[in-house]
Length: 94
Length: 323
Length: 94
Image 1: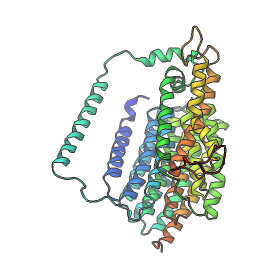
Image 2 (image 1 turned 30 degrees about the horizontal axis):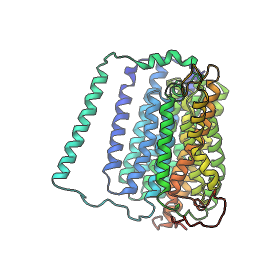
Image 3 (image 1 turned 30 degrees about the vertical axis):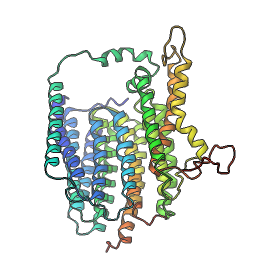
């Protein structure tokens, strides 16, 4: 039954990814889009990685996936900060 | 599961690739074009993964998306509103260019159709596959690059060196960036060791799993790019005297190994039985350093300070110093 | 190492998830093309990075290639470098 749980996790992750993309398209201004993108996508990736870890079933792979997710988190957080600072500096932010 | 199930995904991937490629070239705004180009590089890496080619995926991600993107952005640095001019050429020359491109596309398409028709030729891949256990490594890509076709790789390294010589002849390196703020500084401090360690891992693992010298070198270069973005104008590279040695290290080690193995029954670059694995690792380590330094120097855009006087016996400028 | 046991239903679902992820990336591409400011296009690059990592994770399971996890690691690391390169270039160079 871990397979069912894995599929559920992956589906949930996909949902958050979709939410992030829709937010990127539909939200009114740049900063809110940045919010939607970084928060939703990273959570989606985490859930997806959890599902993949369940499929793989090995501790080594699970740790590797955890490392990837943590790296993406750090990179996204720093990138989001850099992007919004850049926008503010150029006077486009709100 | 058959490949037929992948067809809808493949069609979508192909459409997205084509759309992204066209968009990145067709745009007038150059910064937008570069952003699209980087996205295209990332998608290409995913495509290579889909085609079961992890080595290519790694190389595409590191070089295509990472280094090439950074180089293009560095080229655009001076221009605030980087926009292409309107129709730089027109009339008959434009028509000729269009015809040429259509002809080229037709030739490529014809070649693709011919390949898909499945003509059975001599497939070197099978011959190579049979000999992989003798090659000293178990990763087929590394076996081909560093053993069966080692001479080609040697020449590729020479091409990279020639390109770097071209960059070095452009002039002094461009001035760096100002000091980074806390977030970027922290990112640089955390990421650059990780990039370096990953490069070492890719170099080591290339013998039996996807990886190798080009990928590791590109990751090291990405670390140098990151350091430079964080405010270090020298991009973490050593002094120019050592830089010269590192630049030629790849080719030098390759040549030395290739010549040293010559024996009555062995030709240039024909590794002796049982030594192949170790020699390949040695060559790849040197090549990694050379590639990394070459890409990093290309990113800095020219000769680092002190390049002309480095390695001279006296530090004072001599009569010949005119550049 | 990663010979995963999974039913054909799971395989089909994973394939569907891959396709949906790709559609998500397509939505992000629209923002990259439309987005009035440079920051919007930067966010699309971020999306491609995170989405690419997600796709690689799924493909690692579907194609049983653990090497793709290494590729995902590289994408995660390089995404941050790309974001830094794109935002940094605009600041006043000394």
